[in-house]
Length: 323
Image (cartoon, rainbow, N blue to C red):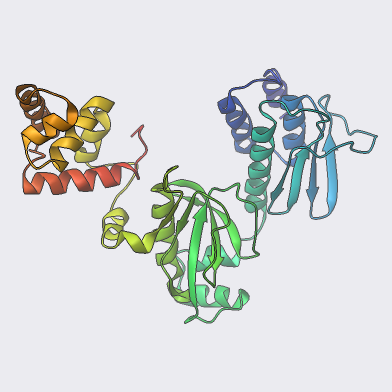
């Protein structure tokens, strides 16, 4: 571990590339780092003291790896996590990556806590692999009857904990925070995927819908309700984002202009109206249409082709683009 930290601390403390910060903490967590190593890493990256309040116990590390003997002059920036809070002790103007460092420190601490702690009651409740008896027992710990009306909300893993019934969970779409809601309320943060309202003993269905909805959020639509997806949820559940269908791969290979042309071909009433919308000559668009038909393996202007395109475009949003 000391050798690993030595290599990582060679990173520029003022590095502006957020990817370096993400990779830094991912490496530490993968290597089995504990809180002390995470704090030393955060201090090395930021060039200031990093601290954590873990269930009321304060831990701090300076950039040289030592425990500061002076009281903290500031906790800025600071972020809540599942066991308390973490911070940097920056006096004066924040540096470019301070917020990112604290965010990843909080998430990393949540992850190592999840590994060390027993499986939470909520994780059991939303796990479809658990037996009915196991889920019922877990519901009792949450003071819920099996027929209680609940929904599960999916948010980013670094979302501050706003309720005891919240857990960071590994999923096929990556690490996601699950939060149990018993009443209609605003999501704890944005972006957020809202699962369907279900009986508590059907919580895995709501969790599945919440994960899909979270993947469909974007800046213009930061909160998506799985209920609004209707039958599309059935399609999403059958989709494996790691092994997408060839129709999805074909869309993923298109460049931005080809994607724009394809969408116009599907949505327009005729080739001429699609050409006018795109500002292209009719004959030029006809040639692009023929080329896209060969590339996709179907004609996107036929009834069946439009359905295939719509399904593939929807599932592409649930797919890792590197697949």
